[in-house]
Length: 434
Image 1 (tube, rainbow, N blue to C red):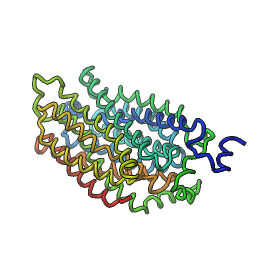
Image 2: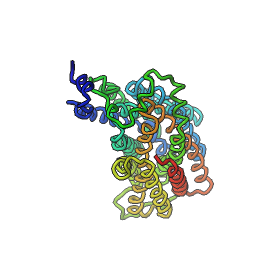
Image 3: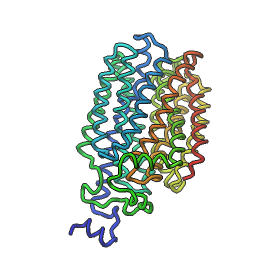
Image 4: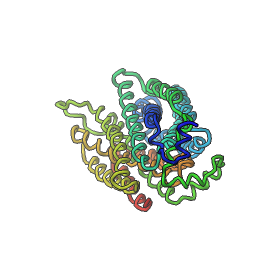
């Protein structure tokens, strides 16, 4: 009789006390983080390509907002489908496939001959991108119990935040340092995503039992939720259970507003600093304006790492309190950012960092909330449904912001819209109370 079986029979050995289990957990977390570290090179580079696309195709910012919306809406639909696929076929295979297929789709988009073909291929890429987050979340939910979820999803979202940093930096290098045209933004950075997807498949394992360990959910005080779910539960039953949870639907509405604010910043801040209407940086500034935009994803990454810890350790796993706190602060900092001209480099740098910190931070609590509400076995479907709302709203925001910029010729308006969306997210999240 092996060690795991002995532990299961005597009830004296918790999952965390199994020799090698903590090491295996860290390996799975790092594998998922490494893979997702490169995912955003496949979808958050679009803002840097906008000036070049406008120049070549002669289209408005509003039109390109609809192209961005095509990706976001296809991503939303993909999330609603692929979270369930992750529950059914496993996060390891699905997430790896997403990275590989998205790399191919980016290369295809780089050969677009007009805005229609660009929109179609960018939308297809959005679906492939949706093969990543929810299946990866399911794999992490398999490996970590309830009282570690906030922290673990904080690390996972931190990797996503650093992916934004990487996508911003590589895009600036392609366009400004290497002086290549916009098409190479969709060709070079995504090669990193290909490496991440292959590495994840080789390193990760779907669940602790695959390596001979007991599940950490055997020790959870909410494991009864999973015990009531059959291992062979059908897709319809999973969707029905998830969609009947009103708190999760409220969470979907709250993250919808939060993600609209997030993508408003991600897509249009590069336009504001690289091709907007702001003043040039003063001659005595040591920082080129194009690098100010990088403060945004750096703030996002650090904010995500802190919010999960706050929800676990300050608010006792009451995720909604951490969400409300950060979104209120996001509203305040975004309003302040609206008042700062681009010529005030250092103040803009610090405030943009805080905008990213507070706008993106709550994502770790939103994802930890999913298995909290519906259990581990349905977590992939729950994450997918919540992310569907997130990107549905984000897609609605893109042409709206682009249209405002075209009409008013003022790229700083993005910060007013971000403030309004953040305030709406905080208001809705107050009613989750879980």
